[in-house]
Image (cartoon, rainbow over all chains, first blue to last red; front, side, top):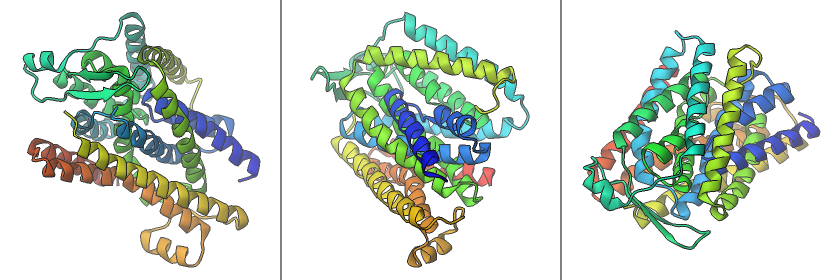
Length: 281
Length: 109
């Protein structure tokens, strides 16, 4: 690897880590096209490096978010039960389904959540009203918003819906090879009434676990190119460092807008993929 | 409500994994820049042997392994912390997540 390529990889990875940590995503949707389309790596090397990159984003971002109290650990652990089952189901049905149709379905889902999040304002509920609703678990959580200095205390509703959506998020990541943060964040924010900052932080906390099984398998088959993966990981950790600082000082509503616009961008990529114009996503 | 103990434990696991893997990967990449060589991910025993002999790829591999291990250790640490807090429902949830990951690895292998 020549020094110019190495620097470009680090630059792309910093961007992936920054956006990933800001929006609760793994950054695979940035790393994979950057490595394959822009730098000419093959798909397998890119996916291997991306899996390591996702774990790096998750670890880098979640360490800070959990320290600041933004992560809802119980909610994350609970949703991980269905995302992990989903990823197993997804990996199995991926063999029997057409990737193009999947990409189209996914594009429709993303556009719907983007439009929903752009049009409807964020709603949160108090822990008391979640309790009145008779939810099966108390997942209420409090964090101090660093921007306003105020304590935000919220309740979590729609736990069953959230777990069902976790199954779909996991299955999609198993089928399309993406992290699933693009599904988890809107579900937590719109169906479960989790404030945007807590939703992105909790998603960042979870995606490392989603990528874990894939990373172990790739590693044991020797499919990870160590120098490439480590270069990506180093860049991503630096990007996550910047991204988490930006999140802590930015407004939740603005994050929500950025997130929706990013979803529309991914939906367009998925349509291109379905049309056969883009192989590298 | 999220407990202070849980947040502190998760922070310690994640930040140690990040700092350790970051430092080792940087060290490995610097060694690689001075002594470029071909190589892929090594099995654990060969990796340890490689580190002793100053093989840059083996050092990078160690960093990657620590990074991959971080979310795994995080689940186990969460399970133990839930146990200390006598939140047995969530101990069960942690064990379930761990079991699913092991199952996923075996299915994909």
